[in-house]
Structures are given as C-alpha cells and as structure tokens.
Length: 245
Length: 305
Image (cartoon, rainbow over all chains, first blue to last red; front, side, top):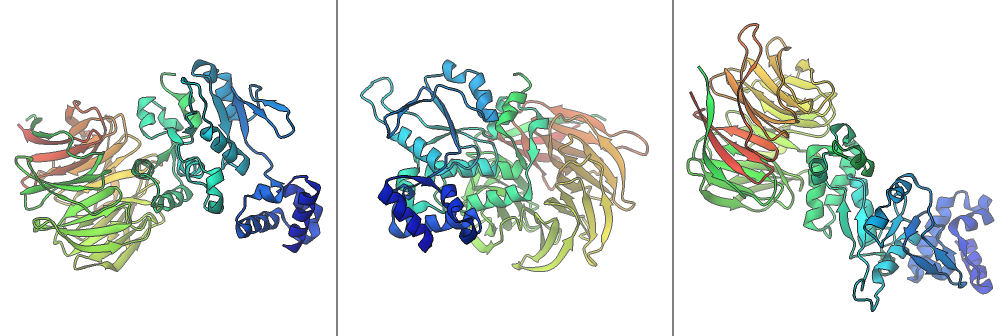
C-alpha cells in the first residue's frame, strides 16, 4: 500500500497518469499479481473518498464507442467516434447500419461488465443538456443478453457497482432504460427455440442474488422471475436467428 | 363416445401478470390462482366470482396447493418463503423462510398431513403440514433441478421430474428409488400427474411430447405427440381414461389413454387462447376444469359427451 501511495504521489507531482496495469508492472515482485494492485487502489480511493482519477490512476479502457459523437480531449485533440471498431456483436450492429436508420445515435459497449471509463462515458452523455429543442438530452437505452448476467450489467450501469458504490455519483446512470432482450421478445420476434439456452446453476444463483436487491424495480424483478420460471436464456445474437428475419 | 369442451366461466384480467398456478379446492367450493403478480386470488368455483385476494408474497407465486378439507392453502414463491393461509378467513397462518432454490413447487398428500416440496438440488423434501419448517424425510436423486413433484393417489410413491429428462419414483416410506424413468430426449420435465387409480404416470416436457408410464413396472407405454410447444401442465381426469394438457403453443388438448396396444388419441383441442396455457386443475367431481394463461385469463370448462 505504501509503495502504491508513493507511486501515486509521484504521478500527481509529475502530472502524469497511469493505468492500474502500468502500476502493477512497476514492481511485479512486490505486488505479486494485478488484483492486489486493483484492490489497494480501490481501497485508497474509498478511504480518501475520491474517484480513482484523482490519484492520477486512469482506467485502461476496455469499452468501444461508435456513432455520432466527437470528444474533445484534455490535450485539445478531437476523438471522432464515427470510425468503426472491432468487437463482434458491436461490429455486427454497426454493419447493420442501424445507427443510420434510427440515428443520429451513439453505440457503446463495455464488452461485458463495463469498466469505469465506459460507465463514466455513459454517465457523462446522459448528463449532457443542449439548448437544441429536438434533442435536449440523450436517451440512454441499454441492450443486453437475456440472462441474469446481462441484467446485472444493466444494474451496474443504472446503480453502479457494489464494490465501488461510494463513487456512484460519477459513475451511475439512473436514467438508463432497458431496451431488451426481454423474455417477451422470444415470441414477439419468433426467436427460434434452438437459440434458447437452458440456464445453469450459476445463472440461477445470480438470478436469486439479483432478486434480493431491494432497489431493483418490480418490472425488472418480474423479468428475472420469468427467466427462472421458464429456465431459458437468450443472447443478443439470438435475434439474428428468427424465424422471420 | 366423443367428448368435448364447453366453456362456462371466463375471467379476463384475473391477475395483473401471467398466471402460473391454479388449484380447484378438493372441497369443490373455491378455485385459487397465483402467478407473476405476487398475489393469490380465491374465486367462487361455480360462478368465478372473486372471493378474496391473499397478499403477502413479494415475488412471483410459482406453486400452490389446497389441503383436502379445503380450508388451508400453501403457496410457494421466488421470494424464498412458503406461506400457509386460512382460505376462508384470508389470513396468513405460517410464514416459513427457505433458502433460494430450496423450494420450487409442492403438493399436499391425499390426507393433507404432509407437504412435499421439490428443490433445485434434485431432491424432494417431505414436510409436516403442522410444521412446514421441519423436513421429516429427503428423497435424493442424481437429477439436476427438481421442477415438479407429485404424490401417488395412495400416498405411497413420490414422483420427481427434473431439468434433465429424469423422472424418479421414490417409495415414500423407505426413500428407495423404485424406478428411474426417462424418455424426453434430454429435455426438462415440466409437469407430472398420476391417474387416480395410481396405475399410470403422465409427464409433460419441453420436447413437446407427453409420456405415459406404467407405474408398477416402470416402463413407458405411450408417447403423445401433437403439441407444438413446451408442455406446461398435465392433469389426469377422474375416469382414469382421459387427461388434459396445456402448452406454450397456447392450446389445451384432451387425450384418451390407450387401451392395450392402441395409441393415445387426442379427443379435442381448444385453440382459442392467444398465450401459453400454464396451469390446469380438475374439479373434485371430475367433470370440469379451470385453466390459467399468460394472457391473465382464467377460464372454466366442462367436459361433455
């Protein structure tokens, strides 16, 4: 912990940033594994009641973004998100030109559980307000696999993560709406039965766990109950395998 | 002799969400229903008039049963409780906490002194009606996730249907496995019922078929095809010759059991429903039944010649 405090101090004095992984590599022998570094940094941030970025530790970005968005970075350079990127489902949705049909829109993926950078971006976008009458604010629509893990990812966006709940003001997007995939979509879009996967014991455990969270709205709990009752889950890709695509 | 269905009572919007469990009281006077809206509703059996609502569960009701006297109702829910109610007074008598996945369905035995519950560990727990918390016997299988359990009419056998196509028949007294049945191509067994004479076991599965087994010899004597969706519920009729089934294909079918080497026949099909028919229960006098659907509808039918 002392070593990490020392490193952070150095970063702050020199006004540079580093990722958790960068810090781990500074002294692999001492830290042993990257999880140790992750844990200590989180603890320090929690102790000082500050976001991690104030320690000049930045999240190494895992997520992807594409669409009608331009970001002006600290160094004044412009990041133009209308360029494509590489994750499979993301690429597939992009290639369907959905964002042009229903646009203008911005597509973001956290590639599974969203990291801080992704959640921060979504949060910042949802807070944006413009004088433009047509689009005064951005609708944040979440689209996840129809399984307990997908629903948990939705919860991370909406409520923040359980481990970093002290920083939810900066990271949670309470206004996010759940677009799908829902159980009612199986019949609605005639998803073929072969696309439905039997839920595992891990899925069931996760589902029961989510049901214990009192702050979850009733409609979301109903959806979890439906998955448990029918015993099937579906991935986003199952919409591609419809009987009437 | 041909039989057919006639509907005599219909209750649209009986619940605010899908109806997953329905039971005609053994005393004949009321019907109970429960499902995704967390509420249990009690209805007058003949007229369908709403009698009362039992509120208390905070998550979906996945199963319910009424004891032989018709006075007590037990309900099972995803909120990890078993609740025992006085139907006529409308109050909660017992509220038992269970672990997640410990109880997913249950049934009273014919005497009403025991209540069997199936767990997601592939076991049946036998509980006393007078003290539901106490598990007096456990029946274990190598099956994954018990989805349904059923007492034989003579209370001597307990059947367990599992997630992976295995049906276990346990001797209630000794807990020995009498038979291990299979026959649904690896699919979940969603529902089971014994014929009143205890000779046959009917199983419904996600492979869209219904199997008929000889209970004594433990062999499959018939496979009934016709549904085009998961078979969500089966219920044997009192004449030991017929049974009804409901499915995600939105149909209700009335079947005639085979005599000797004949095939099981579909006698009649109701195709009027637009959503899954999830649950069915016969009246004690055996000529009527009630169904619950995903369309929030409860409908009563009688079977006429």
